[in-house]
Amino acid sequence: LKNAQYLQDQTAAAVIDETDLIEDPNRLARQVSDLLNDAKRRANLADNLSVFAKPNASREIAEIIMSEAGKLTSNIDEA
Image (cartoon, rainbow, N blue to C red; front, side):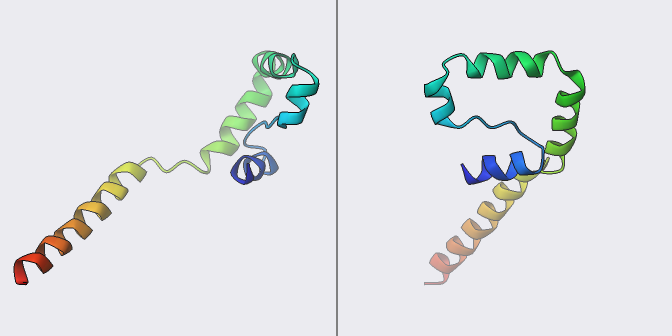
């Protein structure tokens, strides 16, 4: 929830509290409908969210894993 709240604070996401959903079962449908009908708001959310994008994140994580795995096998070979 902290990540979602942070993104909402940056106007990069729309968050609905669970208690709001319990109190009003149609809340989610209304919010989705509102977003579908508001191209400007969707574009604003998308622009703000794009700041957080890490296009090469999976590659960077894989490289770190492979590097660390190489260090482990080197240590095993030396022992």
